[in-house]
Image (cartoon, rainbow over all chains, first blue to last red; front, side, top):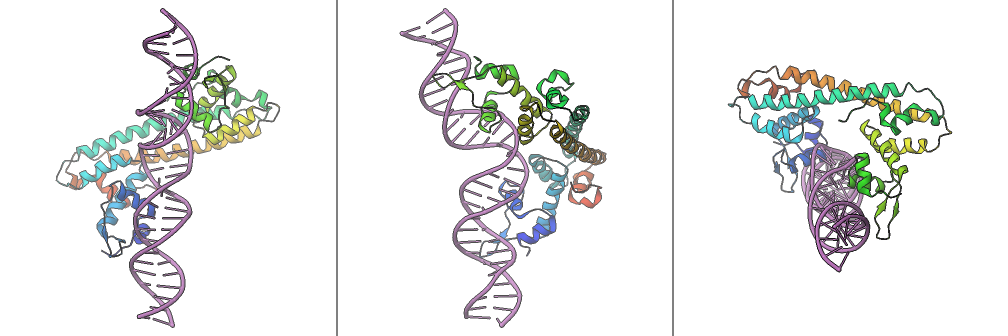
Length: 138
Length: 138
DNA sequence: GCTACAACCTCTAGCGGCTAGAGGATCAAG
DNA sequence: CTTGATCCTCTAGCCGCTAGAGGTTGTAGC
């Protein structure tokens, strides 16, 4: 029970202001304090913050993490909801990939433009008149 | 020279507050005003705003668009810089796709978890202990 | 015990790219 | 001349942090 916020930061790779921010928005519980009001953490907080960091790295939104954490805190329940959250997130990731691939193809067609004057530049033309490309609304 | 901001919004599909925001950050020039201080636009502004919208849809950042616009305004120059901006952006898009695909694969492995108790849930385990997955830092 | 100084504290503001709402003025049609 | 849609400015909020000011606390060495 004697890690400072700096220790916690080093052990988890989460920056100090971010730790305080997570506490502020209720992802991390308020820790014990020294007489001088400095935060002190234990192993439970290290685990919880690692959990949060991993979930963020995997692209889960803070709200989803809040749900995952409250589910994880209750180990007797069925993990169907966890499953659902992950699946929903997977769906979003897949959709994002599809959009980015369409975008990549379009940009690749655009860079086929070879150093001419701007007055003849395909890129500028495509941007100025969207009819020239195949882009669809997101 | 007689489109209201609402007309401009309808013609370009850009919301009214966004148009004012673009003016504020200098992407759109300050338009002429009526005696009562209402904005009035002409075809040049429609073109410019369409250009901005297309570039945003293609994921260009506002700063990149600012550069593209100033280049587009000078049609005698060689379009090498335009090319470079687009290529850099393409590189970012490709990198983002690679990261998302790694992420998708990981999430797909995670959802292979089939409705057991949370105490045995693979998803929660992966999140709690990153050693269990193959994820690399961004 | 005392000093030095790193690390901590709170608070506020900023990033990008908008979006929303309050409260009031203007414009165009009938 | 009235109605009502549209416009105006201004401020604040969204997400997920990040940075900085200005002040306090904890710890190591002497």
